[in-house]
Image (cartoon, rainbow, N blue to C red):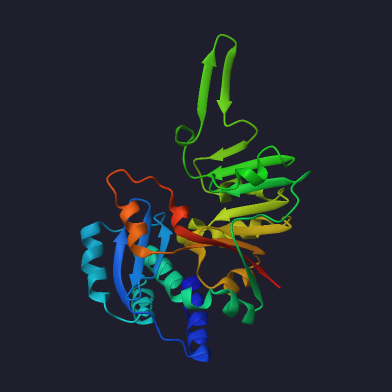
Length: 280
């Protein structure tokens, strides 16, 4: 987990130079999709549950000991353990540690521009575009680019629809080249041909993001998206990303009320402030 250690050290330097007060850990929340943590100020951070995990009871035994402590000390303890099942809480905690520095004003001091909303300010006509973690960017890509490639760990039955009639079978959604059931890195030959690539922040959680990025040698736009990647934008830009979309929960209690409901709607972004980042 050397990448997370590097992020932790970069954030620590920011806290020193900015003399920022360290968040204090209040609770962990294991939602059916998200691994979340919150501080005593009601700020929530999260990452998709895409890594190696413990059982909830085993997590409780480890995590409950850290409540009430400064976030940096908890991160240090988890990093020193070398336990891969703590990568999810580590990513969520690093996202939480990053929050004070993700305002428009403070990002500008780092040479990073923050703009509100979900936008993709690039021309896609004539381009081969890839999305790693299908679902969010259809409005920008589908039917608008030369080729639209979708990579996802989910199998076909988790994403595709089939219509079987007398004249044959059609597969939906149409207009997409599908690469399913494996890590995107297993389709490296396709990644190398793409002009633009946007990957989900869960690639940070399962630690595939750097290897995937290295395969996208031709891509002029190299993006990462989602609440899982609030952590240390400068680190991500230094790696070679040049577009970041992320989101931050506005109000902890209203968000958790919706997410922990008997029938959650899954409309996470309704409860979040959306923003894109680009380095100046």
